[in-house]
Amino acid sequence: MRDLIRTVRKIFYVVLSIIGFPVNLVTVGILLRGNCGLSTCSRRYLLAMAMVDLFVVIIEIILERIKHDFFPPSFLDITPVCSVHAVLRRLLIDCSVWYTIAFTFDRYVTICCEKLKTKYCTQKTATVVLATISCLLFLKCIPTYFRFEPYEIIDNVPWYCMNSGAYYYDPVWKGFNDFEKILTPIFPFGLILFLNALTVKHILVASQVRKGLKGQMKGNSSDPEMESRRQCIILLFVISGNFILLWLLYILYYFDIDAPLDSDGEYAFERVAYMLRNLNCCTNTIFYVASLSKFREKLRNPLEAIFA
Image (cartoon, rainbow, N blue to C red; front, side, top):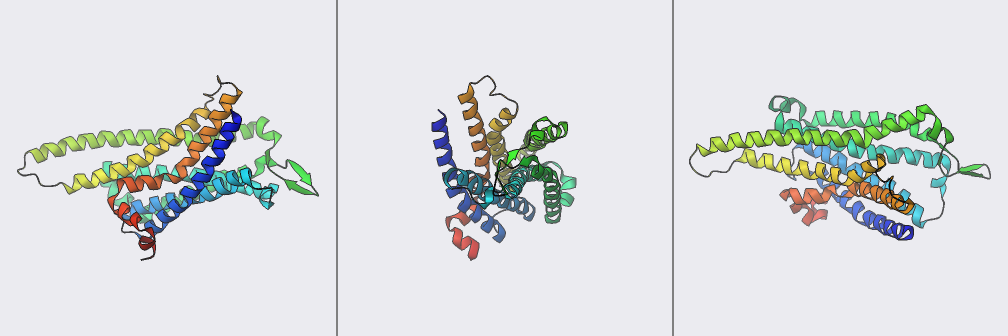
């Protein structure tokens, strides 16, 4: 059972890196060029998400998962280096989650808050929000560097990273660990569900009102406002829905849902939960393609879209 899971996991991460790296790289290039049917505000959020996802592929999947499975120890396994690596991995995962939250909130304001929309949904606000999130998450991740100690010392060189004993027994570390779990992904998971529920409610009410008004008008003229809103809704829900689906098992793992399982079952549950979480880093582009016609056009010839 465990050997099968290990084999599947190795193949999974190799395929994920082969697909995730070029797909996210092309996405970043297209979004940098613009002209893909998005407002400057939305494009700023999606560009940040794509860039973080690209670095997750590099740092988390290639330099951590694949390196661990296929390559011998290197300088990356020296304790100070792998401690920094662990901080970067945690920071990137946190940023990926909270950038998604920022984008979801921006779409909520765009659709549901007409008065706030003109002031909040701007490129400048998006830049400030993303910078603030990044700085706060970086400060939050600094203690992660100090949770590790060397697994062994060879010729006075500390190798590998293992959690210190204090990490398991010190109340401060326990509190920090619980705080991390709440911050990412438990609170974001609930927040996305809440914002989407409010958005759906507003859309249903607005659609009924607009249909009633159109019913009083003659002809079958198109409604640009409803079409624009439909595009925003599709993009919002496929991204946030993707987040909810792929993080669900990881959240259940946090709550020890796998406790009734035997040791092999717990092992499989944990590995699959991490695999789905990491899958989230390369699937957003698929949803851009599925939901935005102009993005699909750009992706037909990505080199031309990036360099033309």
